[in-house]
Image (cartoon, rainbow, N blue to C red; front, side, top):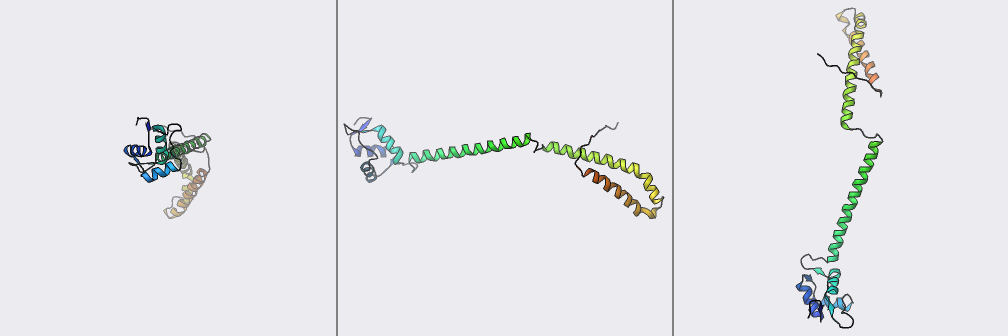
Length: 180
């Protein structure tokens, strides 16, 4: 027997088992009978390449218990799954980037700056309102401690009015000056 051909089915079966393939003699002979492995026309020998191809498609590996083609199919399926997942992530990233370009997303740091700016503006307006309203509030209570509830009510109305002004969507210019 040469290294590239086998003279008999029993030699092929022995080679398969010796090379890590798991197949019984009965199953092997059934495969041959079904035409899954045929000898070459002319000389009746079995070529190693034909035996290897047959084994890859129809015989399980002894170490894994799986056919090579099953293992390859599983690997291909895992690769396709990973590629599909990559494509989904890429599509989600593209959608997010488009939404961001359209202005539907704002950076968290920008939101924080907007909140701080609005709070600074609110405090400035509220302080101005209080300073501007003090003469009126003094007139309301005429310096009388007993009229404290009327003073609280007047201040509360002024604060509520300023809060209402800030409840609308508006832009503010804030000038921050350092205290020296």
